[in-house]
Structure formats: C-alpha cells, structure tokens
Length: 181
Image (cartoon, rainbow, N blue to C red; front, side):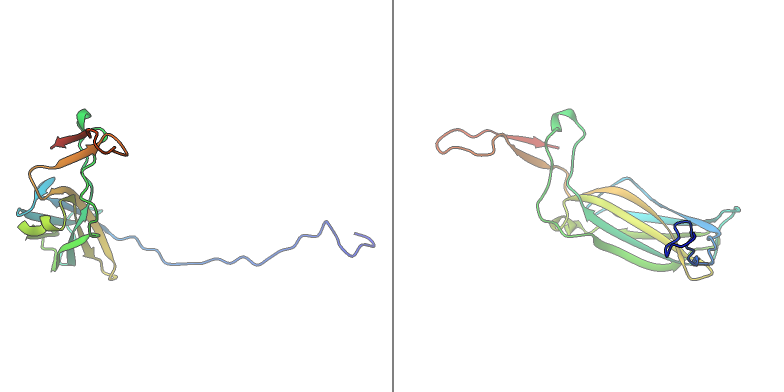
C-alpha cells in the first residue's frame, strides 16, 4: 500500500519441503495358521506359514522365521451366570517366548514348525493367548509377516471366588460366591 510500513495485502511465501521415498510393495503375502483354536499345557502345536505371490502361485526358497509367544490373560466365560466373574491369577509375566525357528519356505511357499507346550507351563501361565508369527524375507531383506492366535489353558477347571461385599464385619456370616468352569 501507499505510505505504510506494513502492507496488509502482501503475500508471504515459504519454500515447500517434500520427502520423496521409494516405496515398493512386497510381491507376496504371508498367512500363518495353527492346528487348533484351543491348546492345553502338554499339547503339541503345529504352525504353518504360507507365502503366496499376489499374482498367484507360491513365493519360494525364501528365508522364514517362526516365533511363538504365550501372553497371560484373565479368563472370562460368556455364560450368563458367569457375568461379573473374572478368573485372574494375579501377577503374571509378560509374554513368554515359547519357540523360535529360522528356516526356509519350500517349493510350495510353506514352512512348518511343530513345538510342544511344556506340561509345567501352568506354573507361570494359567490361561492366555498363544500367538504364532510367521515372517518371510523378501528380495530386499525386509520381512512380510502373518500371525495366528489360539486360546491356551493349563488346567481343566478354573475356579473363581466373588466377594458379595467390599467389607466384612467381624462375627457376622460372610457370603462368597464361587463358580467353576
């Protein structure tokens, strides 16, 4: 504008920064499956990882790794009578690595790994989720992964006690509900 030190109609421009990266999607996908949806302490687990090209056919002769973990979780029953009951054993460890294997997918794009669940694992985890991840390495050295999960229990019965009161008075009967699943 005329006569002013500050021109309100002026446009201030800043340089634009652009990050350019090379993104090349992997030509295959990975699917992992388990031989069941519920496992118990002492049982055997077979995990199968399959790498399949998006264009069709197997992705073959590639490095693969299979990792199995057990994550403790409180058990909840879906039965209406179990509403309000949560089967929890208190302090439990974070995820426990049960098995790790490095191998290769075969001519069908498959890798299979069988491992046992120690009969004494119930000393650490009573109930939880078993997760197996299968990862296959592509030509660039990056891994493409797929995972499968199943329930885990270490015992054949779970017992839950449920207090009906927050505070119990001395010399008065206390009611405690229980549920066995």
